[in-house]
Length: 239
Image (tube, rainbow, N blue to C red; front, side):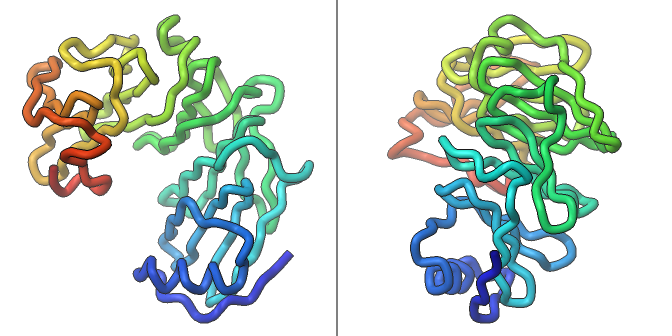
């Protein structure tokens, strides 16, 4: 299905939101990501993936119908590839539709996505651990830790040194290079993770406050609830 919207300025979220509401009044935008080609990609609470190009809104269909149950997560990498995580697993855009990736290997809810510097995509899941996807769409499971394997992974991040950081709900923050290590000194309630580009400093936002990592150990630098207190900027420019 296709819906025409008014012209959109890719750099202006308010114009995008207004145009999206006018053209698709029954869908609520939840995530918007722009690729290097000037295309905007949206996900909605109804699990739709929408492409915005030259002011035109195109709903990108799933090959076997639209999965339900939660808002999709999305990653648009530096090559322009679009990856979508749903309760059924991982999808990618090919042409004008979404196709499943790793069926039979990655069949758990895909809850976090990150494209790493080596070109692989890493996928965090609910209850099945972490997976790696190569450029030719081969999927393999990554050996981590039982706490990660059985947990809910809402966030993955690779830092400037190549370490993968894994947030596991109520099971803390983990670093993954050769093997998985839980980061000491940080509460289990991590909700966000940011590396400041200017300094390389790594910070974690938790329900108890903001922690900075010194020599691999979390140090509380700003106490307070994340719901009502200090927040981390998602672009990593400031805390």
